[in-house]
Length: 568
Picture 1: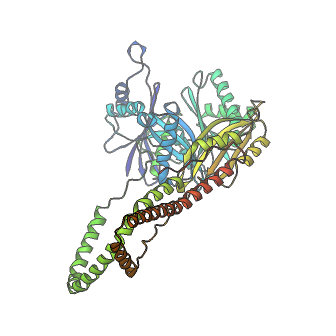
Picture 2: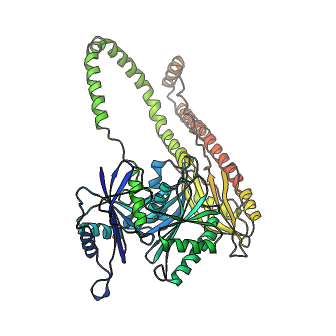
């Protein structure tokens, strides 16, 4: 049996739920809320003062061995909606941090980041919702728990845990639903489908519920969410029903009043449904306790919480190879001992083979030394050219192929390298009409550029650029092939001719003979120089030809830049 304590706290109110769990059965032992007020001189309470109030509220409860689940609200975090290139789940943490670093250079040092990624294959771009919590806020929560004599085991996000409670109580299939939970003078509006949260927002009301102004403001916010949420690309469908967390006559009155004002079905949802109660249960119904019940549900099911800032998603650590190396070393020792006899017996044969190979190696050494440097330089140049993207050229080509500014405007553009030597360019913008986006796709698409526009939607608020779009381009770098001219094998000399020549030269010692010898040497040297230049020329010609072809392809839609010569 496991003991759990869920805590939610802000500057105005503190709530807690103490429970025991056996399997997926949860028994609620105690729950309550505490109004915090303000300290001396009308200042906000410090984490130490809040912790003392929590400790006082739990004074009668047994807290030994309890697992503490803390939460933060929407106003304490910063959310980012990003799209990352195709990647597997272990690769996502590093990609998400890199994209967020582009949004804020200090976010990796000043915040804790966790994220939720839509499911997808390794060949598809994935949409990610990233949540960033400032380290100062993390220190505030841990200091509050420490002052109460507790240690936080998890730090969760309140709206996600409210959605977890709904998905446990309602087995829905298909459709989108709006969850409404009033917490003091705030209301959480959460849109979910049958498996996950799609959208959420927290709205501050002018007063607590019961006030006519606050109830009218809440009704207006529900209407606005029902109207705006389906236009989001993540939702895309109308909301089928509204669920209000609460029970009792007051909540029934509000639900009946809202049902008269909107056409969508509104239903009251009892948050305590499905829970058991202990002998000394003295809990009271409050909207602040709803996400705490969701935290208990998600924890007892053993599934990973949507967002947990104390256990954020990280790239997996490399496996420990020490044990594998120890086993391998033992096997090598056993095999070496068993094969020692055969090694000794075959020593003579091995020596003969080594001698033969050494002679062969010596004969090839000269040729290897002669060609090694050229091959090394050529391989390095070819590898560099095959995996590199000249971003300036790509930007030039894109800017030349885009429609004119009166038809289309780019708001955001991101370029990132990808695996397998490819790269990705994604951008968002506004267009005068959908035909402009279609023409842009046709202009950008060629043998090296794959263009996809997953989203084109109409914008009502702007008459000039009334359509927004999001486009991704997958590009393949241009290939440059470098060849090394083969070295000519040394010419074989006829021994008999060489001896006759040496004999003739020995008999000729006149000045004329010496001059003829000197002239012949110069002629031979000139021929060798000409032959070497001819051997080096094909590689340069072929490289220039390939570059010319690449430049010719580029100039189809835009002014061509001067071809870049590969530099060793």
